[in-house]
Image (cartoon, rainbow, N blue to C red; front, side, top):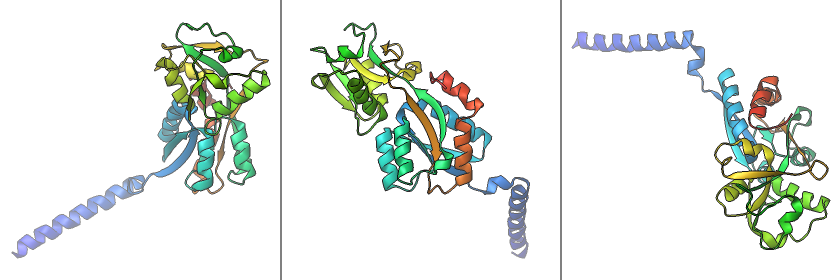
Length: 261
């Protein structure tokens, strides 16, 4: 009986010794990986997924990406205190967040540009060639929600800038994110929608849509920025991630997905 107890004790001591030895040799293994919560516009999904994975591979940080329309994310910043980094699809949302004290202004960094374009069903069967065609009778238009996503707000601004009216009567669906607009066109549920041109690089829908580019003088280009949220818990990690998004290494990934510097 005594020998049995000694054997058990020896086994326990051996297990403890192995654990201590392992942790001493591998100190990071005993710690929970730090995490970083990023509020990102849904139209940045492809590059942000890749950028987050690259950052994780180079740092001991888990990047948690929360996607949504920029307006929706701005609202979440007001209600929640969970985000560490904010990456909206247009600088207006960053300016709004900064003005309300939700963003550390000194950390705002310019990244890339979003260029609006008109997405149409593959082959453009309706012969859409310009923004003014969106008001043509009988056309089915999908539009981003101006209160929820940047592309919706930009679409309204584009129509106003170019003096185009009569589009409202053609709007068949209003979507909370630009990603959903792309799917409506790809599925043939709408004839046209204003989207971000860079989304054409997304393989899932590229064979189902065609793109009509908007002349530069008629267009409104959005500037994408990133910044650290004021109440961020892990400031050092958040600043490192924002800096990485603007780095030359990240630039290659942005370009891969159709974004312009």
